[in-house]
Image 1 (cartoon, rainbow, N blue to C red):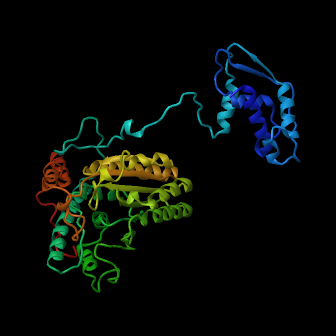
Image 2 (cartoon, rainbow, N blue to C red; image 1 turned 60 degrees about the horizontal axis):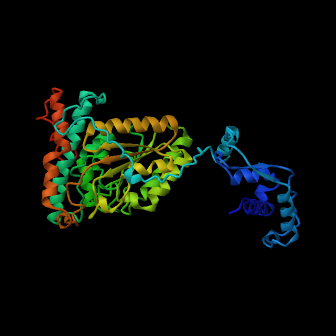
Image 3 (cartoon, rainbow, N blue to C red; image 1 turned 90 degrees about the vertical axis):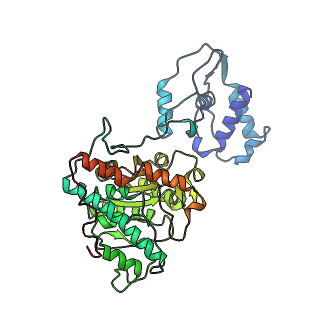
Length: 432
């Protein structure tokens, strides 16, 4: 388009636009010709400032023969357009324009950012599959008693799963969901929280509640829905809740707990409490709209909440490769202005370290943090599911053979000189 025509359109639009009123021709020309000058570029010399006809309707400028449009033509006649040599860009103008656009950096290079070609988020790992500390890794400072208790809870959750899964198959309870393969994620994160931190779980975090003191008898009462159940039998099995342990009652619909956790965190902030809200969910729940609303809500309200995504590879029968094309769940945090960490969910030490860091960051900055724990769901989705219909037995056995959280943590304990033969089954009886 000829320079005169471009100026005509800019000035015509300026006369009809309230936001751009009373700017000079030079301003419009600089907007059109923004960017570094090139050889043969045009230099705009201002002769006069066009006066806005406030009484003219906006569509009066659409007719080139109308009085307002012809007035613009007269102003164009008073603009001298000459060829010039390249001249240095006025950096003050560029900085001013950037500041006026939210402080965004200015570029003259057109570049398409493709997330599928960019580097993936790293995964924090402290101990390898054999339980040996990796070179350069920082091991969290855990007392002997804490480390032993972490191992006990891991084994106790496994044992509880075996008992209740068999009870469901015998018809004693109607439904159950195992935690097999994800126990390190439970104890690693729960051990880094304060008992007063409020937990919003999904339905595969029994180890978090067990760490807080929920007994095997409490679990049995809930699954059987008997008179001693703290929920009075009003919930499905495995939909635990305990006011005593700051563990909000689990809800079946996916992701409803995520925005609720933001509200709780915001309330803690207003109360001045030194606590966070911890929200657990799977990568399948991250496909729900509540997940996106919650992250944006938490960032804008500056709420001290930790979002912990258990990426176990499957949303019931849908594998992760069919759920998203981005770099997992952690990559979504940047778009909402949320800090994030990706961690090996089968490494209890790394999970503890990541959660402790996230909690400290959330409290000191009043900001949310997203943690993505990479793990694997060894068991079926629930007792209503047969996972061999959508994945092979070889795949399941392969994970059992190469990366059991309990084995990794046990080997690390032994490397520290801790005997583990007496751990795990102590207090197996219900009520212990």
